[in-house]
Image (cartoon, rainbow, N blue to C red; front, side):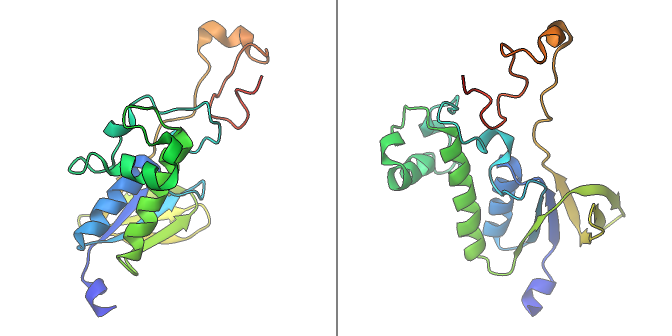
Length: 185
């Protein structure tokens, strides 16, 4: 505990790909404490990898999806251990598997850095920055202090283009392809 008191605190708002991998990198360095805030409560998936539909596939081959550029086969090795049928380096794995991979990375890294990762479920509604600190204010009234903050907010919710607004409500229009069962026909 005494050792950790001198480590800088980094607040990461958003725990999809960018937030989760940044947390993994900071924790692996051994020089930071990290608070990771996610409003969905699911850490490591974000919108793109939270899907449960098997038809949602990565749009990049598995051998190019490692979270570690210095270890390009990392994701394919993970697939070999967790989803052997999808471990083709030239294949396009399910997005849900990639989300599971990111979640595993976060859990494994946190286990090797006991006490240095705090996961918070909730929504940051504002952040105030001072010269050498930030304070995040949560919707539930909690305040989180840190030396630095990173906004890893992900992609905004899809908006219906003006040209197709007349299709809203039609079974021929899918407003949010990431919504559960959106592609069930």
